[in-house]
Structures are given as structure tokens and as C-alpha cells.
Image (cartoon, rainbow over all chains, first blue to last red; front, side, top):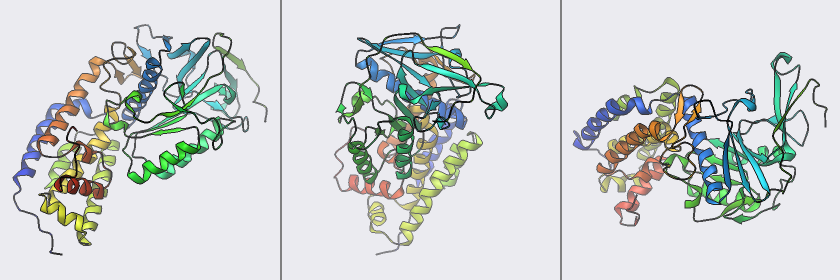
Length: 267
Length: 153
């Protein structure tokens, strides 16, 4: 094969350089965000996509606990008191659920096993416990956590290119959150119901990765959705159905926050 | 030549984001060097379709920028209907991030302007979301061979 040569003084390149200089001058204020801000915006995008999925299924959606200026105050960290932030309730028939961000989950595996997914869907009225733990914040602040038994679905948002280890590690998160999580358990591919626990990935996936994702989705009640960086994306534009889960019918009661002082008992 | 482009796009960025951006295009450049060094036929075919290495380096920089800078912002844009949240009712994340039609508009214009420059230069949006140079070369050759029917991008 002949040695590859490239032309000198390529006007195509100088033209694009000039246009991008102009672009950077005009728009850098809009796009130059900090990494943390980028991740937050991406997570909010996933949250809104999820919300639109409920909207499209004609769930009644209520925005709760708005800030004094009428805006939605997004919980940014598991250390925050959920009572001080906005959240969503979705309701259909006798079923009502909360969509919240950054709620710590106490695993069914052991009460000392806790973790915080980006978005949680859980039964409305479930108790988010606040307990003082000497090993948490020096025992000075309460640690908020929701028991895993109340969780319908967890959703994790990763603003990066997908890769096999990321997909596989999501299984561990689901094993920790869902007591019934196992191969072929509760698989239901459809366009209605709660989206099964989902990993939202910003980057596109290669053909090989797509095969891996489809295989995982055919075995486990989960979804891995890639390509959110393309923007303008909604769940309803998908051609193939996603895995869905049903929620239990439960009596409606208000969200409760309890305050305790004991360290949670070991399972 | 593409170093100038990388500097133009990278200079306004926050340090962390710039590191991601630089790592992303450098990884593609390394992969391109490997493909050229090994004289992979795909690269030669791309050249025959009008895409020499220097142009591929430019595409790598633009792809890195699309993926590490504009992509995360694009995920929350372009919602015009559905639940009012994030459209007419703002979402506030701390003191620095607000998502609403008003705040989304300049970002939407930036993404649109960037896409337009790329399209006018013959760069397909699909190439910008590829994470590997081999994938870009594959897409270029598919288009060059007339196998890419998807012209609606």
C-alpha cells in the first residue's frame, strides 16, 4: 500500500478553524460549564426524560415542595434533608409514587450497606428515616435513608461513553437495591409501567456494546440507554420496548420523616 | 494545524472539562497514528474519499468537543412539550445551574451553530458521537462507497 500523504495548505482546515474561532467567541459563555455543572445538567436531562415517560403514560404528575419563587429545587447531595427539596409524585388509579433525586437506599442485604443512586422511584408514603449514626458526620447530623423494600426502580446517570465494566457494575447496584433481582425475574418488555431500573449513558455505544446491552436486558429486569448526549431524546422515540416493572397497589399516606438516635441494627 | 483548533475550543473551558476534552481527542489522534503506521486499508480509503489524516485530526477534535462539552448540556435541551418542569417552570440545582426555556436557549443556539459548521464542512453528526477513530473512518468509507443511506442526520 502506498504511503499516505496529506495535502499542504488545506483550505478546508483553515476555513473550519476560522469558523470555530468565531463560534468560541460568540458562544463560550453558554457552553463553558464546570464538570460538576455538566454532570448536574446531564442528570436533570435524564430526570426529565423519565418524567416525560410517565407523562406519556397519562400518569397524573404533581410537583411538590416548590421553592418560594416557584422553581423546582433539585436535591444535589445525599446529605441534604429531602424535606427541604422539591420532588415529583406520579399517580394512576390507586397507585402513587415519588420520584426523587439523591435518596440513600438501605440495602435488603445488610442494614450497613447503603448507597445513593441518582434517581429513585419509590412507593409514596414510604418512610425516609433520619438516624444519628456516630460514624456519620461525627454523629452531628442525621443520616437519611430509604429501606430497599420500598424501591420500585433506581436510575443512574453517567455522562460518559459507555463501556462493558460500567454496564456490568450496574448489576451490583441492582443486586443491592432489589431483593428480587435475578436473571429472568420479572422481565416485562412493554411500553407501559415503571421503567425498570435504568442506566442512562451519555455516550454512544458501538455495535459490540449494543449486543451486550441487549443481552443484559434480555436476562435481567434492567435497561441501559445510551446516546443521551445527542440531545432531543425521549423514551417514546424508541423503536424497541424497554423493560418495565409494576408497582404494588398501596394505601396512600403522606411522606414521613422519622428521627432516631440508634445505630441501625445489623440484619 | 488541528492544534490551533484544539486551543481555540479548549481555552475557554474549565480545567477539568478541558482535561477530558484533551484526553478525548488525543486518544483519537493516537489511534489514527496507529492506523496510519500500520497502513490500515480503511485510512487509505478515507484518503481516497477526500479525508486525509490532517482532516481526520480535525474531526477528532470536533468529536471530542461534541462529546465532552456540548453533549452533557444537550441532554437537558430541546424539550418543548410534556411536563412544564424545565420549560416554563425552572429547575434550580444549587446556585449556578438553572434549567428552563430561557436558560436553555443560548446553549441550544450554541449546539445548533456548532452542528451547522460541521454539516457545512461535510462532517456528519454521527461521526461526532463516535468514540473511536476506527468508527469515524468506517463511517466515512461507508458514505464514500454510497452505502450510507441515512442522509437525514
